[in-house]
Length: 485
Image 1 (tube, one colour):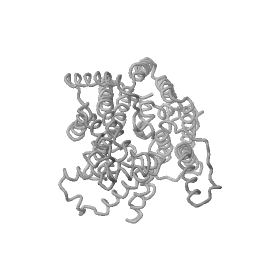
Image 2 (spheres, helix red, strand yellow):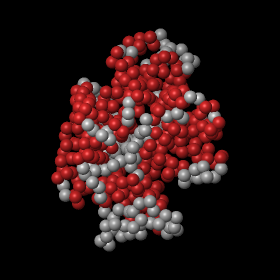
Image 3 (cartoon, one colour):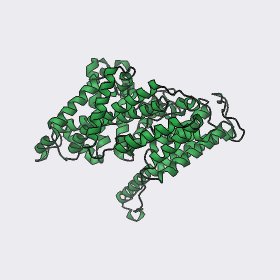
């Protein structure tokens, strides 16, 4: 089930909100958990088993870490004191949590990738007899990259003393499975909502702002991301294209993935507000960034912060010398790329960003890049990001290299390339592309624009919502990009 569907907007969401608000306070989390499991299991009920397994394991580990029994009758659990020695049982519990979550993620996301690369290696070494040639293929469960990271953060936060463990299993199951951000984030760390799970307010201001987030997110998805995605699909699937067309397609994909993913985050934040939760901001105008370092402070903030706090800093961060800092930075970005997808293109995408981050850090304040005027730095950053998106979008590594060759004029266009213009430069698609650029660099963020909602803003929001619904009825099924991650 996707947010941008009539089933969700006019059936599931109204039913969920009605039941949630009619339920007594003690029953709200149970109802929300039930609806979340129904939402997640809609496409494949078997996926619910994995979600439940991860939830049970981390719940038990949290209690062990907190040295707490679920049968002593107390609801609250005191947080551990940070920087104090941990018992062996606590260390084992956090290790079990991390290993079980990473094992789930590793098996379901990377099994096919590992087998394919092993078979390719044996073939290259002239050892065909060692090939596995497995007919079985593992289906990637929706959202597993997100909820494993989210559930794992609970055990780690409790272990570090940054949050109190939850004694009530339903409260914890609600946190892990909450449908607004279950499938494609943002990654909500337990420490960010632990107190909200115990107590939160439900106000008309929150509800109305949440509705505005949903309407505007839907408009970003339907009116901008989908048409830009059509441009990108046509260009990337066309084979050898001209230089101008290739840059047009790469920029269209840059707009598509930004408006698509930020739209999902907007809707998730809006749904959270309607349920009384305040989720953190996940995008901060990333294409306004004046460096790659700045870009990663603005893009998919919840993932960037997760990788920083749970991977980069534990590896030593920048505290163990310059050489170790660059190694840590490269490793984190490579793993961040692999987190997005089981393909070498994603690894190269992460490595490319790691290289750029390292070069910026090496240059410091004296780098030529930082001496450029601010608008030029923003344009240069967008230029580099567009190059990186080619690896993110291309079907495989040869396709990515061929596309980059077209962008830089080293691969000649095919004889049929001129015919492509009749499809991608139609007034509708070209107009949407221009609108995407104008909104990217000229419009305020949804987060800021919805802080106050006078009558004229409400009229604009309703008009965009109605237009989105009308166009949604004419568009083919087009799920959010990050569903596949």
